[in-house]
Length: 238
Image (cartoon, rainbow, N blue to C red; front, side, top):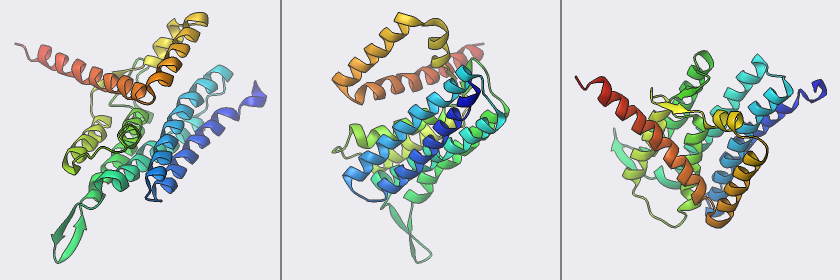
């Protein structure tokens, strides 16, 4: 196992590389470049999910791996989605200020890397084994990436997209609690049950493409918001 201790960090660096390449492809300003950039964010999320599990399986978790993971996530799920959102939906919203034309899409797009960086820093100093505080940055990044993939020919009003985009960003730094489904799955599903779940998800992905991911991610985001609202109502009932 010690001979494989490098594997988790390689996966993490692969995550960072995918984030960097996503920015490069999105900068081509073509529909193909946007799709490739979005898919690379999804690949980064897959690698991000694997590096921690591999480290635990190999018993090689380390402080440097944790810090490296946060740096990679800031690129792949902060900078890359922010830039992708800007070039696909937010650019071109200009206003005149002091005789100059200011693109409002730039500060709106900056919300994502700022929120992702803060959330990752907070996670490094305070985290719970059973839940996340705030929407996990990979989930937020996937949501942004799915827009050009699932809705390539759909016109989304800039104001509506800016609102939803900012909402997802602020959810990352919110106090809304989100469960850790991966922990539940790995603790309670083994062998044939786990294989069956993987096969079922693969079949659904084959039939419905990326809409399956969008559905599960959307339900996950709503679950945290619903739990937050219910808790708020119960705390302020009397």
